[in-house]
Length: 131
Image 1 (cartoon, rainbow, N blue to C red):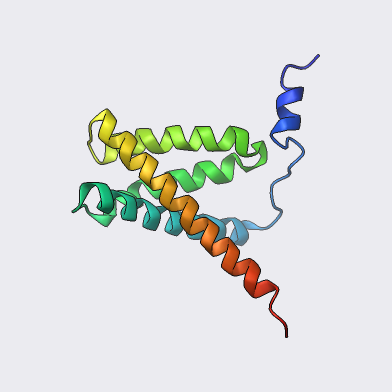
Image 2: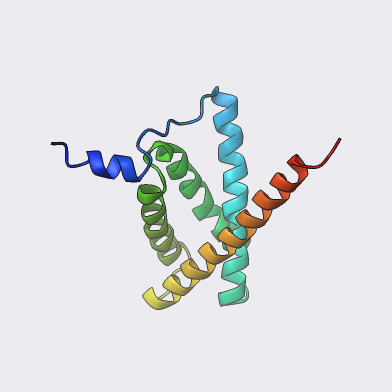
């Protein structure tokens, strides 16, 4: 028996990446980088007060690229991997202590979930509007 068969069923192993050309992947990468950069900068400003936005946009493209590469594995694999990667990148790029980097990463994912949920709900609401 394949030990990963049960994991594939739980994580949506039958999820296939979106089809599209190079332009579709480039657009997704750019929008994701923008989203991650802005939400990380908001979190870093909240915790650290004065930080350069360049640091957030140093971390964001790496997270966006990893997300695109791992998209077929499902959220049970991708989320823990990207949380760990974001923590490590925040630790190095912002040159913080372990605890402070963990706090920035926690706030970052909180902001990202809130903003992402809000954008999704607005998109869904506009999609159900009459006319």
